[in-house]
Length: 183
View 1 (cartoon, rainbow, N blue to C red):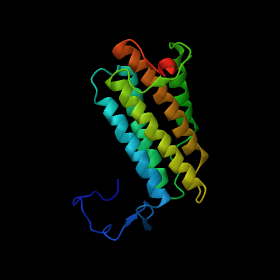
View 2 (cartoon, rainbow, N blue to C red):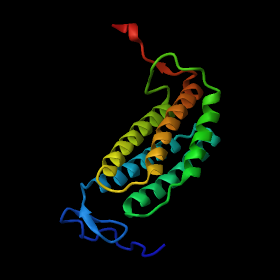
View 3 (cartoon, one colour):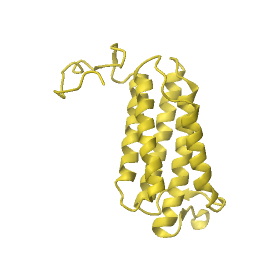
View 4 (cartoon, helix red, strand yellow):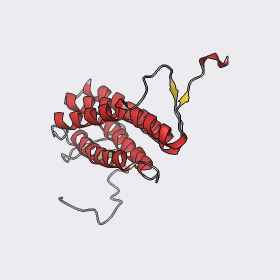
């Protein structure tokens, strides 16, 4: 790693700009900063899931790997022209998703976010990843973004949905189903 921060504040962002990984400066609300900032938020939300003691080890290891992936993905977005996310990252998500989904019953109803603390945290992470995906798609309309970045985020939100289903069953024995007849 290059320069380490010994002083956290630099005052260089006081004018409303921030530095990208290539040294260029952009507005803090630019599409690129919105995209990698939302990826960072998604990574933090996965940290919330990991902070819950009841998360099974297999899921815990997958989520920790995903946190590393998201750090790489954020770096790819922060450094224009940089590549970090590749096909094997996406296939790993798909394999994990397939393995976890195999033991779940088919969906017949919509699921509400909930089912336990870890399940609810997983649903929250899923929605933040979906927002990150939307931000990246907005960025891709104006600047070059590799398709693997969008594919990774898309698969990750699907995986977090399945993880939420697994965790809800582990925590409370059931998922919270939407009751369409309540009206």
